[in-house]
Length: 160
Image (cartoon, rainbow, N blue to C red):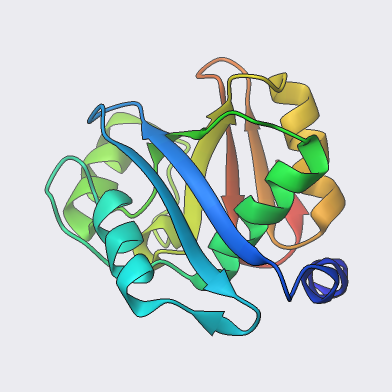
């Protein structure tokens, strides 16, 4: 978390923006969500809606620290592509359905709290994206080569 704080201080005076393509809904969003310590409430609401559980339509507040991780990840990778979102917030019903289908889904997934996202970048190799996320030391990083995504969360620093 210290590394994230140092990088955040360095860019605190700059507006923070993100761009997304949702792989399941086909929706796109490009938005400036913060400036310094101030998060724009309207932008956060738009992000909550965009990063909703695409299966049920349920929304949840997305942790602004997760947004800041994504912003830093774009800087570290020097990506110009939007984040491709595979999954962000998951409702309890969706999480349970996924647990019934697969062994790798945590019962207390941080997706349930709006603290996790599964992403990829079209212009960054998946292994490079994982390594860049790990370099932030800002939370959990999961590497899913087969399904082709990297998981990021704002929980404790760990990897799998």
